[in-house]
Image 1 (cartoon, one colour):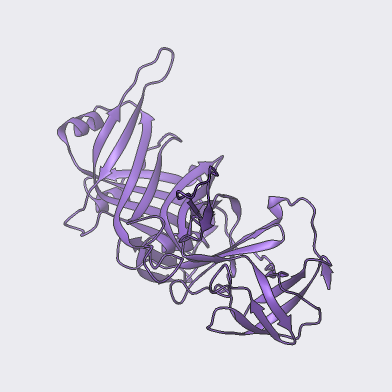
Image 2 (tube, rainbow, N blue to C red; image 1 turned 45 degrees about the vertical axis):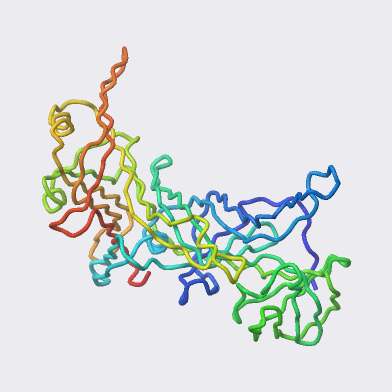
Length: 402
């Protein structure tokens, strides 16, 4: 038995863990730990506040259960070993090639099959597990010299803390009076913490079987006494980090050319720090398809993909202004490198965005007294018929499997 720590909690003592799911929406135990800076994920139970005409002045008469949604964003370190998982959540991986000597190149783009993930956050005493997680957008940015990612996500469901209906011997029944299927999100590889509210103590048990009725579990032998209304939640994981150095601004190059092949080998042009990009793969609804037969989304239906690219450089060349006015297409390659090696031959880890064809939709050259003249550009990427794509992202990393 242990005592629950009820003191104030420091966010730094938590973690973010993730793992790709074998079957979309079916939770697995996360085992990849990623440095997390912040998260703002909201679970909305969409409480239906009913106020019919019943002869009363109260603001609401009853509340009813609604269909739940889980959406929000996370900000994480962008480094070669783990960034591929976030690309997996958003895009279709069309292939992987390479060897331990050269490193492995994973190629991502628009397609019909992104992956879903289980994510777990430790918040104080309570692990919060989201499953069926997919990304809606990824926005790299630089803080000082290191890259961070802001990832917009949506999840199908969660497991955090549930009420116990009964627990004795090796059997636990979870309370499903308010939350149907309360054992969803658990696996037989999990440990469950049983919390005796009145005593302020807990014990940990191992799950050996999960009943498909959504509420019954078989666990290792229970030593304490628990009554209806006591709580159960996951035992926190023990974080272990296997990461490389992050991609950084000092090793970022911007290359332009008449086509993607030319851009890949062109001389880099040094851009200002305000230059950035975001990749999006939109959903019909960020909340998911709220179909009949369940309180959680049935699916996340993808629609169109896009890039938002903004560039800034000092104004010294009339060619881009002419390209803007003449609607001349070009190609762009943005290459972010890490000081870490992807291959044993010294190949560096790289995150590379290849834009096959773009046009300048905005080109501003503002003037202000005592300031250097800069050109700010907003790009409109288009589908390139020669390459049969609008863009692709290549990740060169030491990881063979993502």
